[in-house]
View 1 (cartoon, helix red, strand yellow):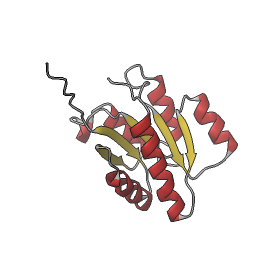
View 2: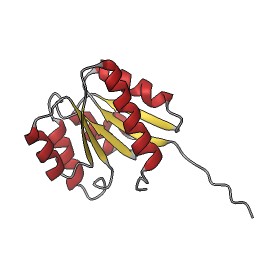
View 3: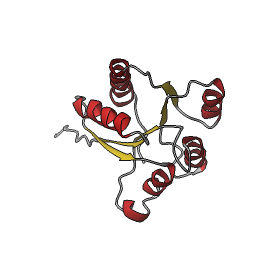
View 4: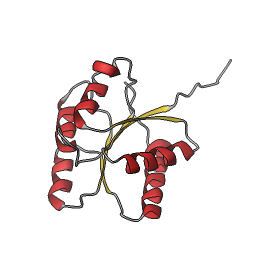
Amino acid sequence: MNSSVSYRPIEILLVEDSPSDANLTIREFNRAKIANNLHWVENGEDAMEYLRCQGEYTNAPRPDLILLDLNLPGMDGREVLAEVKADADLKRIPIVILTTSNDEEDVLRSYNLNANCYVTKPIDIHQFIHLVQLINEFWLAAVKLPGE
């Protein structure tokens, strides 16, 4: 009896308007020992199109995890969070808020909108790298993510 299990890479959607933060996050996830495909969009409108496989994202894979910045141009991260968690097809996708805001109101509102985790980005690049590594280790190695 063959007991081999096939593993697929973990699909991650990064919603981040800062190219430098996005590139650093992508680099650190690529360094991980866990297979992952990280897809990056720069605003809330593109995030929703990606999640709904619309426009240029018609063949986008369903993310297993979303890393979401709150402060985005146009449709901000709070609106994306509310829309995803109100959608029966998307609401089980875990969302990690990864933002510069440490405003208590943003923290409470994010959890009230059913964010799975709230993390404030540190200013120091080495601390930011360490934070991305911690997110990677916890969400990709320790947590059982929901399937479709």
